[in-house]
Amino acid sequence: MKNMLTKIKRACALIIWLAAIMLLACACSGNLDIVQDYEFKVTHLPVPKKIKKGETIEIRCQLEQAGYYKDTGYVMRYFQTGGRGLLRMGNSEPFLPNDLYELKEDTFRLYYTSQSEEQAVIDIYFFSSEGNSFMLSFSFNNDNSEEEQP
Image 1 (cartoon, rainbow, N blue to C red):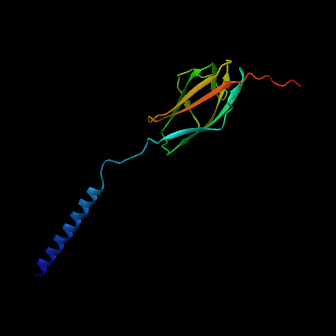
Image 2: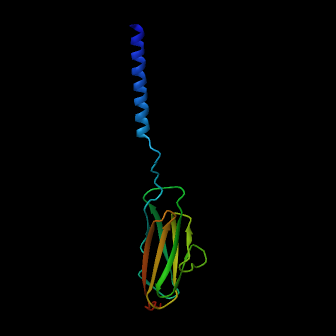
Image 3: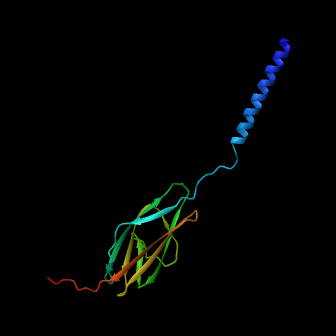
């Protein structure tokens, strides 16, 4: 009888152990959901609405991410759809339209210099290495007012 009780206890322990292993196997799957693709936007401080030919304005920008993944990179490109002008970052050479430029910091400054006396329109597209994008559009009217003479 004692031997039979020992066998029953061992069988119950084995069944409990197998049930625990099956529960763990079902709870764990090989499909881990690691998020790498976060939405983002680029915000900026207010900029002038009018600009004179030859004048340069500063556009202070901030890249804001909905989440952070350390290997995500960001690039930008721009198009000038109206007027003529130059866009650059910091002391860099002026950007070429439709070329990609890497964003190395989350906070950056762009500088636009008008080269025409007509309305200027620039569209700036930002892309993450994960495939998300964001666009900023700026429209500057020509400021042809005369400066006051002293």
